[in-house]
Length: 428
Image (cartoon, rainbow, N blue to C red):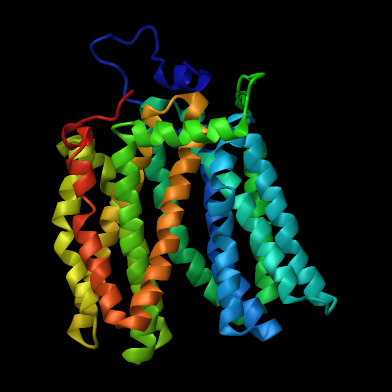
């Protein structure tokens, strides 16, 4: 048992054994507060750069649509190229040190944009390098962050900790992009990138403020990167809990991405609605994720953590239809409500599935498990984007939305045909 677990599970000697004191809020734990602040600032920075980097390319470099598309591709390429070995590397290092290093790398990369722009020497090639380096650092930060959480809070409080972190993620999706849009209306895009760099510096400072010991993994003399990556893949796809979570998560990401990729084309080009309508529609999705993360633990306590995963999936199955039928007038509001319900389920999934993943994985495999999951889930996003473009071009935009709706209707099936179907509590 780690020091963090001993602190969180201990009770005063005078407390009666039959009436244990309720666990104190994680926000009373300074180490968790610092980690929470670091994760929130990191996500906020990513939300700002989601708008700022492409606008730098468009406004300052007069980039073509193809060049902006390449910029977006390079920002996620690292998850597919180094996602799996990153897990093996993280398992060999102190997790918090990896996160701090990743933050500082992102600070350096992003800071170069306003500096070189001020000198009048900014090029698209530099932007390509910046997003590629930042994406690689984000891979390490995300894998290390999820792997470090059990050490910090104890495995018995993972669902509570993940609920807080998912809520922060949802709020930064809504507020971060809104703030990013406002910031870009006040200052130039390169200056907004500088604000993004500051957010990562703040994240690093929060992590440096954690005084709890960052465990150093035991080094093995026979360590082999390829063998360790294979072991991570085998561990995930041979485990009766992790395998259905990976498959269900990939199906969800594929279906969601089909919708998210084609909705901007349909809403702004075919329906002729203003850009703010699309922004509001996606903001509703962030609200859904927030509400789902807020409700996840309560629903899991009432119905069982595993049961909630497939019951909610089955319950929201019909809600993909109004999204595919989105149109002007009442159909727009109906689609927004359906999107809210769909992302509500995503918020529940993000809390419970991540908690299950961390609970069943031993410390020695934590980095590789998270990296394998990230590889699978990000791969599904890439496939979803490509499939959406193919269907939108060869058939129609609505055809892509209908395929996404069908996918959302069946994402509960892998969970139903697994041991998770009747699982009540998270494993300890």
